[in-house]
Image (cartoon, rainbow, N blue to C red; front, side, top):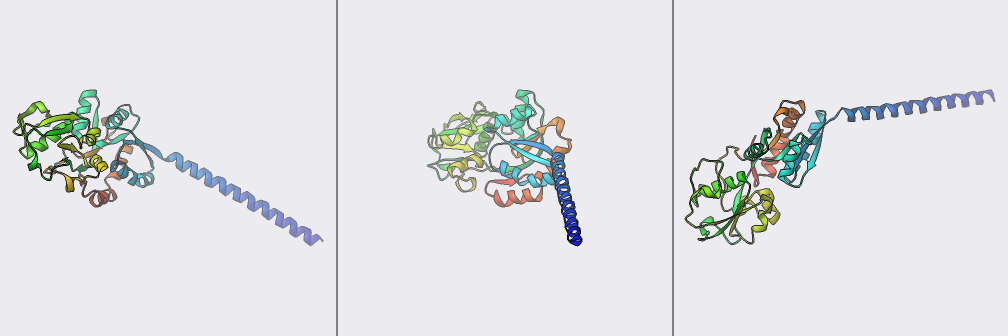
Length: 279
C-alpha cells in the first residue's frame, strides 16, 4: 500500500513539474513573440494601383527580416499619396516620376526627393479606329493629361513623331500654348489622368499609362500608336520620401529591399510588356 502511495505521489509531483514547465515555456514563447513584434519598426508607404502595390507586397518579407514591418497605405489617387507624405502620415510613396514630384514641390513648398527610380512605364497614344498614327485625320480630337508634367510628356511624344512641333523641343514644361506648328489642326482636350480611359470612345486618340489603359484591355506594345524612345529614366516611376528622411535607417532598408534581385526579376519577367527596369 505504501508503495502504491509513493508511486502515486511521484506521478503527481512529476505531473505538477511538467505542467509548470509547459506553462513556463508557453509564457517564454509568448513573451518572445511579443518582443519580436515590438522590435519591428513600421514603415508606411502610400500607393494606389498595381504594379506598384504588387512590388511593395513582394518586399514585405525582406523588410521583416531586416526588422521592419511594411504597411502599404492604399489611397484613391496621386494627390492623396503626396498629401499623406507631406503630412508625414507615411514614410514614402510609390507612384510618381521625378518631374511630377518636382512640380508638386514647387506648388506646395515641399521637399520631396527620389529615393530610387524603379521602372519606366511605356506610355502611348491609343485610338479605337486607328491602326497607325499615320492614319490620324485632319482636325482629330486628342485627349491628353491635364496635369503639367504628364501633359508635357504627351506633347513631347507627339512632337517626337513630327505630328506637332514645339517652341522649345527640349523643354519639360510644355502646354498646348507651346505648340509651334499643328499641321493636322488637332483639337486638344485636357483631361485628368485617371479619367482618360473614359475618353477612349469619344476622342480619336488618347494618351495613357499601361497601368490605367489595361483596365480597358489595351497594351502599349500591342495597341499603342506611338512609343517613347530612349531610356534616360526622366519619367521613371520612383520611390519618394521627404528629403529630411533620405538618410534614415528605415529609408535605407526600404531602398535596399525594393532594388533587390527579386524585384528586378519581377519587372523584367512580369512587366516586360508594361515597362523597363530603371535601377
